[in-house]
Image 1: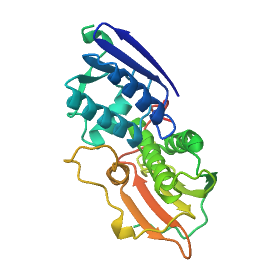
Image 2: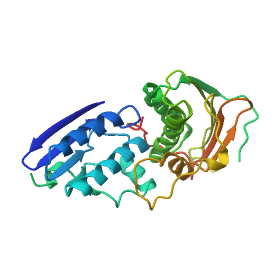
Image 3: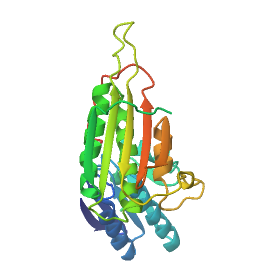
Image 4: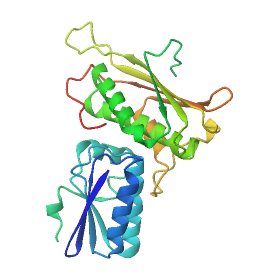
Length: 108
Length: 164
């Protein structure tokens, strides 16, 4: 799975392109970790191109959220589709994350 | 709990390589769609199978990619609701078997969700999605997971794209 990364001011955007499953999660985890290590105020994970996520993807994002809290930064999820949101709801994680409609809603 | 006693109508054999997860999901979600499950349900059934296979790969085979896994399917096509005598709900029974490490079925439990931490969600997700989930040891070697799902209503007509 390809993961794109970009940085604008205090915001890093991580954009996974494809299914986030046991195969793709390590790539996403490495990209988020690299972005967080650069110390931006916030990391936004843009899920617009993610049609499918399993529990390994959830675990990756929970770990990233814990890292963000520990460092005093933010982790924000954007553009989450209906099917991916349903998985967050099953795991009762939808309230654990800040979820926005699109990356544009987050200040740069 | 449903206990399949007939030969499965479809049987898939794969190696314990994460590379094959997406193909297994696509097969299951596509079949669920044709049986008449609604859009979200067919994606979620595929997710339950994905979680089961991932657990076998991760914990059963310790990520070794050459273990064998079999997925057997007993589908039931649902009526589409257009005829009053044709409202049978779609249903799907799956049996997933492996030759991996055996564990006590009583020890296979989803974790408490209140304690938010990475990992441990797969079994919880399977139990939330499927109507019935049963783990058991196979004779001699490996585990057997039986899962069943019946649609909540007559067959849906919408698509099920993008969840594989």
